[in-house]
Image 1 (tube, rainbow, N blue to C red):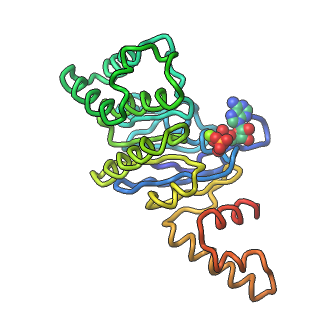
Image 2 (image 1 turned 90 degrees about the vertical axis):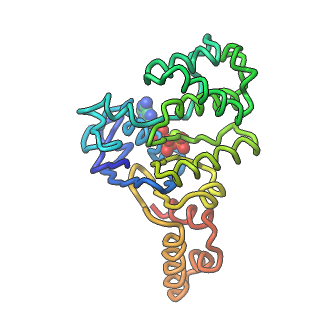
Image 3 (image 1 turned 120 degrees about the vertical axis):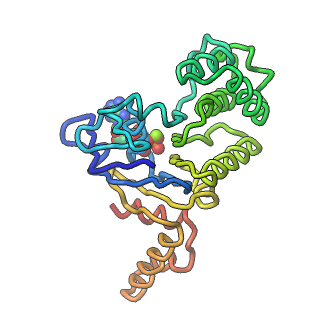
Length: 259
Ligand SMILES: Nc1ncnc2c1ncn2[C@@H]1O[C@H](COP(=O)(O)OP(=O)(O)OP(=O)(O)O)[C@@H](O)[C@H]1O
Ligand SMILES: [Mg+2]
């Protein structure tokens, strides 16, 4: 579980990149974090993972406060950053060894996990090469594998589908589903609304650091239909169309343009 309470962060005085954000990510569900560029998704994820400290508010990951009890919190999650350019001079396998050592993954288990995950993602042969020789997609796969070596209960991913080919993104979506089905917690940001529509059980939509919506997609559609009907009754045309077309893309555009 991930819990945020009244979390605020600003990079410059008077402008909150994240603004009093409260959010609960329960286990067993795929929770998607949506919002336009600059909405505050990465800033939120960096606070959840302890990279940035909130100015105000509390964050718990797996029952541990990420500021006060950082190590215990960090042991319990795997994180895929939005930029996979890690330790470029290491070989893939050296990077995975390093991560496994940090998380105290036993040798035999490490080998088994690497064979399984790198085999599935088809980068086993490349692991003996330096990361700087990898394509963006290969780097993305490497950080995905690294994030799962210690079998974390909580999996946090920032734009994980960027740069993955159709086969790999299908595989990743399957991995996300099985993580949730096994009772794990999963929170990921995405711009790809089709993906969100297909795999999320719950979505959180933010804009200008504020939470616009949290709930199941069907509730979001219902909300859009109600607004569309109300607007239609008032002679409006814009959201009336949304009453007919309840695609997430349309709802999302309308919601985020309103603010
Ligand atoms: N290091 C920084 N210094 C100053 N401002 C920043 C910094 N990082 C982010 N911001 C600002 O904070 C706001 C939120 O940015 P953030 O990167 O969290 O958004 P995002 O939702 O992840 O966007 P994207 O979809 O482009 O990844 C933006 O207005 C951005 O310009
Ligand atoms: Mg981002």
